[in-house]
View 1 (tube, rainbow, N blue to C red):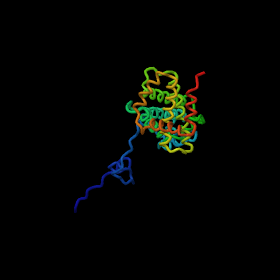
View 2: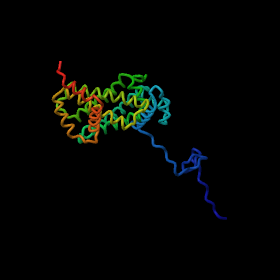
View 3: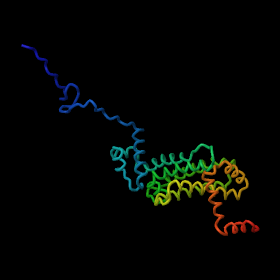
View 4: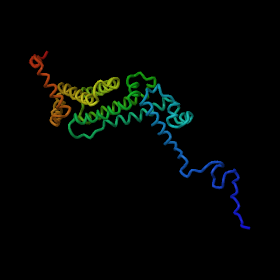
Amino acid sequence: MASRTPPAAPSSTGAPADGTPAGTARNPAERPRRRLSVDERREQLIAVALELFSLRPPEEVSIDDIAAAAGASRPLVYHYFPGKQALYEESLRRAGKDLAGRFEEPASGPLSERLFRVMGRYLDYVDSHGPGFSALLRGGSVAASPGTNAVIDQVRRAAHDQILLHLAVPAPSAGLRLTVRAWIANAEITSLEWLADRAVPREELQLRLVQEFIASLTLTAAREPELAAELTGYFAAEHPDGPTGRLVRQLAGLFSVPGLAEAVAGLAASPPD
């Protein structure tokens, strides 16, 4: 009589000897999901929150929304952050750092072309983070706080400092600093209005913002002889088809309006008060 090999004895837990739970078919492709470290989980929650805040105003995003998008539980989110406001402020700090970095540009080539590239990256960011930043910058967000306002101020200071680096003026005057700050505020207001209706094509808005800065810089130079000397160098480096060259042609075209050239000449000839 042929001998038979006895079946494998079950484990003490009732599972087959290979460790697969009883009644469960083993799938060789299955692998246990890697557990995120503390830092990885925190970064994941910030990234998910930032994406949600970019798509919707912060008051419309809940902790449950963030937990669901991250594949986490509500208690787990609270384990890392005391509440939505703390998570919002942290995600905004990350966003602010990214936005401030978009003003960085190699200091080579015509000034207006550098600023045109900077404003392209700025508008990219505004476009992709519209609802959340629109609510904050307009002051209508219930999530606005001293912490969030500080982040926005840091972005504005970074933009201000980067623009002054491009101008490369040894000792920027108070008037020049004011011109730069006013232009940054104008860029914010204009881009937020553009988000609301998009009545102006994107590239036209980008060009307009740069030309408005060049016009403001020229007006400031008219009051400050030292800046006027710097302006000569800026204009000499410009290309005819660049933003500044196009602006000069547009301004020159104004003098074809009947009577305008004569009116301007009359004002220029008038004695100062």
